[in-house]
Length: 175
Image 1 (cartoon, rainbow, N blue to C red):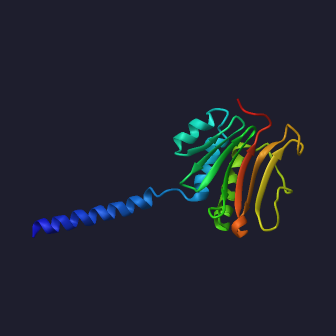
Image 2: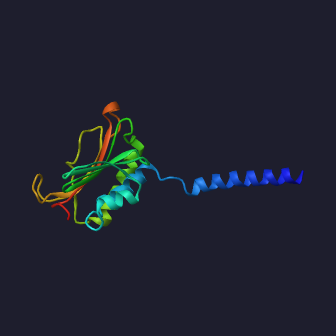
Image 3: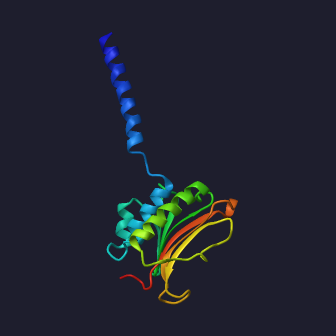
């Protein structure tokens, strides 16, 4: 009888510990994970090559062309694209961000831009339509080689056409 009670205590304790551990060390929300990818890879490209950061964060490389590299992140169901002077984290239907996730990501990005890029001006023209969650902060004339900034566009309510892009545009290609 004591062995049974001890076994039940061990099993119950293990399940309780597993449940509490899941609450403490739960995977990040999609908006948090996308923000982490963006900050750790896109914003730090000049200090750490994107390929090193992507590998350390568990992304899987899909393509590696001279002008573009693409990774997949299974945790957030997103793509990381590095192309010349831009770097972005993107989602598409059926894994596009929903409205709540996109709005949460917008708040994170606003704080991130204020902290990391206080010199960028909010661009109220950065929009892709009334049904989108759009934010943009930029410096330099539009379409000029000196243009740089951070842009978030999410269209969560477009069904099969739903998407999101969180992009940083640098004035020149990082080395």
